[in-house]
Image (tube, helix red, strand yellow):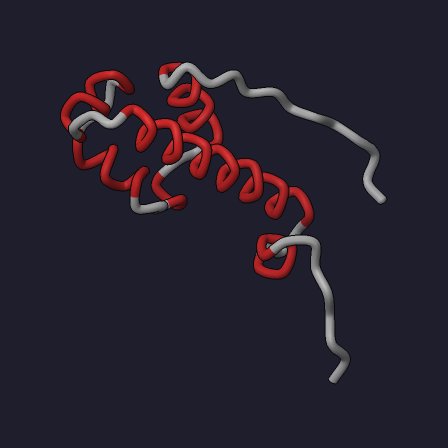
Length: 93
């Protein structure tokens, strides 16, 4: 059996490069959002209010439940959190 190497875990787990790219973007956004919210040093109730979501939804975010969030939802949350999201597009290798 030949050993394979991947740029990130999503390249190994997802069936297509497009699915891997989507999951990579979602995980990057989720991590940035979690860091931003933790940096606020406020209660979960206040953080949920700032993001305009419920506390259970915030809990999903903070626990990294990536399957509960679409890319669109994470981009919207990032905007509410005061984060600027930028997409960098390059040719595939």
